[in-house]
Image 1 (cartoon, protein in one colour):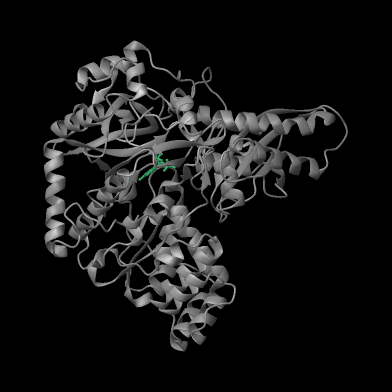
Image 2: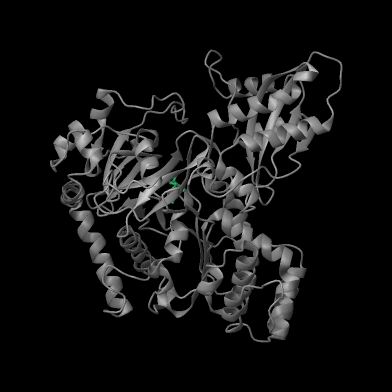
Length: 612
Ligand code: AMP
């Protein structure tokens, strides 16, 4: 993820070298005094919000002491504050969660009831996000010096936004950030010098945005020192785009004229400042792309690239082999850990292996607490976890400086924007410490079984979707005896695969169209982030059902038992990842069916269409 231009020490006040030093000193200071900083952050949040309705409702109003806060305030999930959020969305401007006005909602990729969660935000949060961005390059510069001598080729995009019935904008956090003056009006800084002009990033048409960003990146290929996108899936989409559209791109570079499909005047104008007729470059790119293989395409076309900056921790780790292939094994750098609720931390050892990445939470960002997680056999046992915590569990929460090395925790945050003891849903493991501040491996997002891009599908959603689809099979007297699923990222875009084992009781054959309808019904039943990925972002391909032979799931159980699973406790995994198991399922496929079209999706929330 690229860094913010506005730095803790202001970008314009110091030379880049001095600023880097000051930023590193800032990290030292806040990690040494992690506990004092946390105490101060909590007191600040509680004193400024002393009279908000939510805190008064729980009887806290006015207290800023950490122990009282912990004793009185419940640890919550989104559903606990959904009614408050809805009031704000519907136009209630009274101080419900925050004494400062809610400036917008950030639409999380986490969902509730199939719709994106809405995270309240306040104007000053932009400063806090910028601060976290500003830490990234000084840290990076320690490992890879000289990045100020060239450009970063980052593929960054905005997504659609909606208005709540009360008139607040609801949009993803990165869209909010790229549209803010913090990004758009950043002063010149050699560390935030990108190949993509702002206009190409801010273009709402995803084809034009991608095309123009790739075109500029190719034109400036020799200057590029680092490449990236936010998540690995986005960067791979860009390379796929190049594989598909290189003839058009080369044509533009050869002639110095931009493709007429790019109609956005501001994009055209911005690109024309970079695009010059360059037949030699066009020939070079054409020769490389004609080779047919994209192995090492990044180092071939952008020969000075030192690393690929994308998040490959968490579900994105499935893309590591593809990135290695495209980049000939360049370092994959995960710089930060953030969410719509709050930006959390940075990776202080950016050149480490993806499997070793740990994030140091920056104690000024929010007040952090940690709920110990106990997992069985490496599988989070969270699916049956009660929504609200017992008194005893509430007492198990520990502070930032009190976490134990090697222990796993669920992250709980109290933010300046009005979330109090809110469970983010991420499981983290303590990997070490920077001074007093812990460094965490990202382990997983709780409950998520399937993910291709920013979609996060849990077991319950999958189960409901399958149940809905089974209605199509009713007339045929068949039973779904077992099923599992797989996020197949060997296709680009990746897609969901369901393995179904059926027991046929009747004799009427099931036409392929029925299975295709099942695929579509499952897609229609999945949450809005999935459907947006299918419809608008095109980041997810059509869902596939693979019918497997009778007895396949028994074989799967035999295999799991041979690996040491207990017969008594064996449960069919609703999602498979382990390659030999996927191979076993694939070796017994009888037929495959794909969803024939995109599911329905509209921006905003379903409920909003009926309101005004
Ligand atoms: P969103 O609220 O849509 O911005 O999604 C935020 C979630 O994305 C986090 O809570 C994590 O589950 C995931 N995420 C963000 N950054 C990282 C990272 N560096 N590594 C792994 N997962 C991440």
